Length: 104
Image (tube, rainbow, N blue to C red; front, side, top):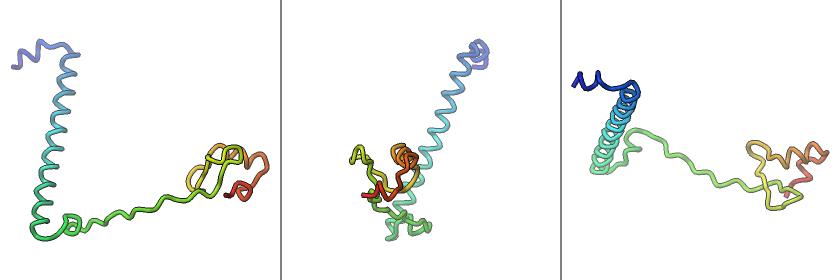
């Protein structure tokens, strides 16, 4: 086999290298998934969830925030007041309006 590899071009060797890397990564992922399934089955057989056993906290789901501000030019453009200000909010503030003027 070494002679076959020695006869390959650099492009072919790099392609082969990339393919082998993907196969190795896929193999590890499959093994992890298999281990996770086995652990979940064992935990279920004992009457627990895997999260209960390992102490993982269940993520709290937040309700979507209600819109507090609306674009005066287009009332369907709204903003909750969280995160980055939309362009229309920044433009309104630059033109002298306040957030209170944009409140719903």
